[in-house]
Image (cartoon, rainbow, N blue to C red):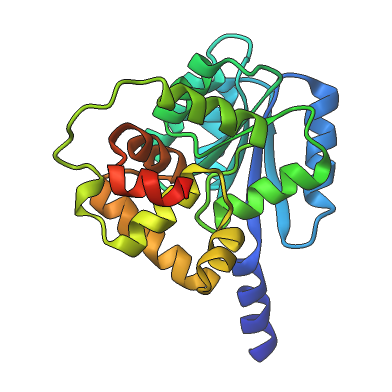
Length: 233
């Protein structure tokens, strides 16, 4: 019995990953990378959105690597359909494109990360680890595009804006909007990673957002003047 319980506990620690990619070579490669990584298991690999919406709910993965351009229904539409069925599913978009409109469509559909296909194995594995830790992985290149886009957007008043955040939460949100990962935020503010995660959960609740990207977007739209002067000092 103890051995069975230990085995069950080990199973609970495994992150189940699904792949939706129409390129057979890349699909097989990603499956092998995931299956050969301790703590990860590829539970299904689909070549189309139509197959994914049937197979993925059956296999119940934690994370999906989703190609944005698929034959038939797009990866963005597939993400929206899957998230309706599985609200806790974490979807990372994989694409060769850096189209800002496509990025926002994917995030609006419920994706929580966006990684270029040319990313190496480590970046893809790090992205999976980051979403499992509550983050929103995005290459620095794409993050800069998102930040630039929102900086160009006129600021308007918002009843659910940043004025309801504490001073510490504003500091963390400002660093998050700069693209700093949790470890860097913790180091710069001399607090623990766990404290950063707790503050981020409170920030998401107060701003009515689901992820880092949405929080950064709202901050850049409704950034208070005192934080602007603080972060530029």
